[in-house]
Image (cartoon, rainbow, N blue to C red):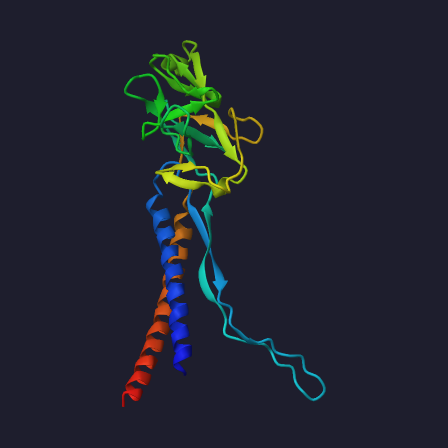
Length: 274
């Protein structure tokens, strides 16, 4: 085997190891967030690169037989990486927790609405001033007209369709009526899988996420808000484990090829040095 071919093996193997390393990072990140509320798994695929075709072959004529193309296959790199927005299972939450069943994202803002991020994590609480509903990072939850304010009311909870209610305990017991304070607005994008991760489970718009639309629970193609519920991570443990094992096996095969090529190159060098 010539040294050029051996060096090509090592070059392709290095590219493959980079792709497998990135893939394992994705699987590890998904696995680490199995218990994270509202987490959407990253999905990825591999693509072939460096197609090496020596000749295209030819069709036999007369007494000359047909010859298939001579080709040495392809290298590999990481292909598409996107967010998996399949529905996560719903679990029980507190009075101010809620989940979205179907399409859509909650909108949260760190500055009253000028900057908006998006999330499926519906774990909310009242901020320290008692004036706004916020997420774990202190970002205010948004309605159609802006941040949802408590108006100074206490004993709060979500009613159907993401309507914020005061006097919630009595309402839940069925003994008194509640007062409606505000309503959650849901956002959606043309290409929601093209959004980018920002902070925790918060996402932001990207160049490919498309136009944003907003509306109340159940409007148009938007999903419905489920009060006192939380959406669990949509990571599929068994699938992630199997995929990670397959990547590790591929890495082992490539490492074996690297060792063989390296040993051959060492032998050639030793012969040249006499």
